[in-house]
Image (cartoon, rainbow, N blue to C red; front, top):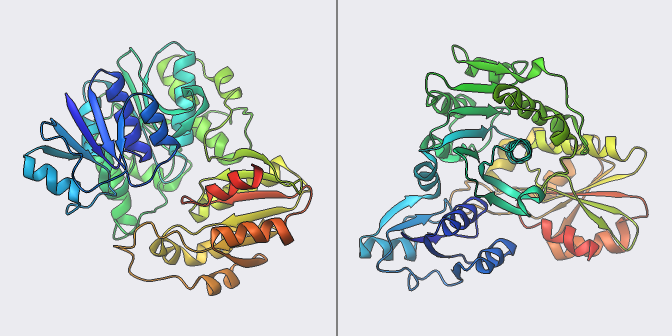
Length: 416
């Protein structure tokens, strides 16, 4: 089969492309930004084009798979339509790819990637040889976000954005939490949680949901469903800090118990993933740099708490890049309290990931001033890096670089 992937550098679509390539299909694609992910795809023999004007779409492609970032009127989608090529979204493609497998799907507002990575470690160590797609790079998967297994188990990360996970066919669901996000795509928390209920309803009669029954929202959603309560198990011992990490691991321990395998040793040696409390190194000033994907108030609070646990007595500085104007405004008051445990917060300009649908703009100066903890506005990424190096960072500081956008570049630059 000949497959063309538009937006192939995305964390999900890149994994799908690599997996299909490893399965013997002819895969190519495009992305407007080169990255480590696209370079890795190229190393696997997948042709990746920078230009997305439609000129690289093969006229004889069997299927055109596009990421959520590619609008309907994009040149490549227009060209695919002209050629009469079947077009499907990444999650539609993932649903088709995985439908004949026994699917273990990890969903939730926070913690999906880490929980999926932990589960992959446990299943691989137990010899169950799963196929895996996860929304981050994982050391146990050779630093990649996918794995081709030879068993009938397909472990995947199930994203709720725009109801994407409703294209999947789960047999087992691990649900981390459902406290709400993506309100550019959902009208309310009720609307958001209804999508999860629809996802759970896709389980077969013998399917099971593994979740935290101490979480009132999760408990409400699984009423009348076959449930395994992870909170009945003790918090696993991990080598990575944070209560939220242990709670993710509880779900994986419950999955292992459900499958009749052991998880203890695998979880103990779990070393984390890319951009999830990832230790990057030290700056010239002697500050420790940690890179984290946290971009929601609850995630930020959990990450700072983990840093306080791992580095007691040290000054915790947060470099935060707000992700989208709509999310920042929707959770405005929650963001202001999220940094309470930090000693200093440095903000950057908002990462404008969805300018076509953001309705308002954040006054970043006011936002920074409103944060309860001591805070300063640092400006652009280049400006904030200069300020950190010249006047802020001191020996023994812990710098948490947080955000789902481009701020990760600063973390790398500071230790290079």
